[in-house]
Length: 158
Image 1 (cartoon, rainbow, N blue to C red):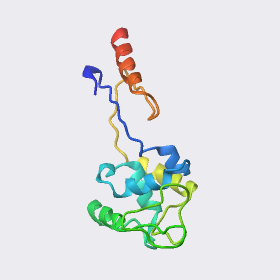
Image 2 (cartoon, rainbow, N blue to C red):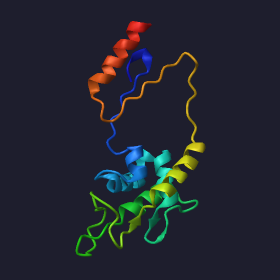
Image 3 (cartoon, rainbow, N blue to C red):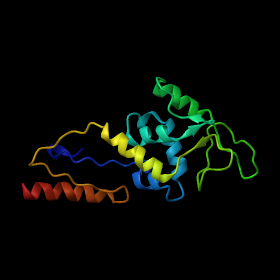
Image 4 (cartoon, rainbow, N blue to C red):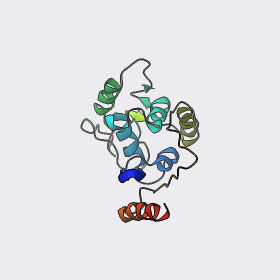
């Protein structure tokens, strides 16, 4: 955060909404699995969407009533198969490309994921800003100096 302006620079190469929803890029599957098993993402809309749409070990990932820590441990205990069909060591998932055959974690298709993401957003609680608030969105690809520059511009106009 930056001073009284509340400017926050969040660096997170994993939480890329469009890439994960539409399964774009080389890392979308790997990052989706990271979101499912890392405590940092508890309560996020992407995580809710992934658990609502994925299958884990052939079962729906949504385990009603199971605590987040239990779900995380279960996902961490799994792995993908390599190009020759051999099971990889525990916690090793394909970094690039689509879901491999006989994968322990199968992610849904983009239309189903988008629908589930919309449902997850409906239940989200976001802080309401007043009419005098200005929200500036900086993408993950934006450079760090852009945040400092935005804060300096805010100070100049006040």
